[in-house]
Length: 245
Image (cartoon, rainbow, N blue to C red; front, top):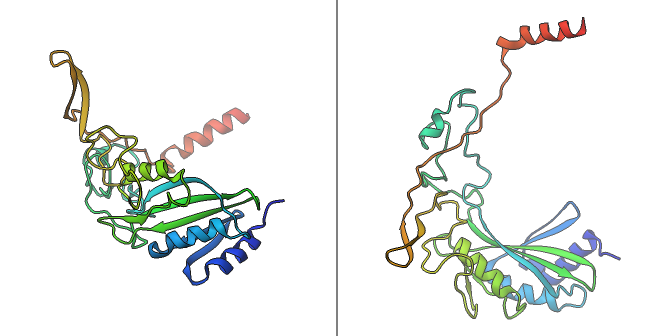
C-alpha cells in the first residue's frame, strides 16, 4: 500500500526539521526544498531512516530559472497581423530575454537562478519525493555531489553540469557527457543562443571534422495572435443564417 502524501509530509518534517526550507503537496506529490549547506546531510537521512528509506535515486534534473514566470512575447502590444516583431528581437512585442539574438538581461524572479531537482523513490514504503536545491551563486553554481549516497548520480550530475553548468563538488569525474569535446557554453541555459555558436562538417581536403562559426541566418517564427474581428461578424452571421434556411 502506498504511503499517503500527508503521512510522508509528517515523516519528512520529523526527520529534517528546521533544515526544510519549504514543503508542499500538489497533485498528491510531495515537494521539498533544501538549502545547499543542508543538501548532503538531508539526503543521507532520507535514504537511511527506516521510516523513509529512499534508497532509489530516479533522476536529477538541472533547471535554469532565469526569467522564470515571465513571457517573452507581449501579445497585448503586438498586432494580430504581420511579423515585424519577429524581424527585430528587441521590438516592443518581444522582451529579448532569450533566443537567437542573445540576451538582454537574465532575471530570476525567485532570486536564485540554477537548481537541481532530485527524484527519489522508496520501494519499502511505495513513496516518491521531489527534492529541489538552488545553488547559492548564479555566476558559479555549486552543489554537493550525492554520488557517495547514490552511485547512479554519477551520470545524472554530469548531465546537469554539461547542459546547465552546475558544478557538483565531490563528484569523482565531473566532465561533459552529451556535448562534443571542446564544446563552449551550456546549451540548456536560457542565455545560450538557439542557433548555437559553431557548426561542424567533414572537410574532404583535411580529412577530418572541422568547426566553423554558425552560418544559419537569424530567423524567428512568430506565433500569430488570434483576436475577435468585428469586420467579419456580419458575414459570419449571414452564412450561418443561410445555412439554417
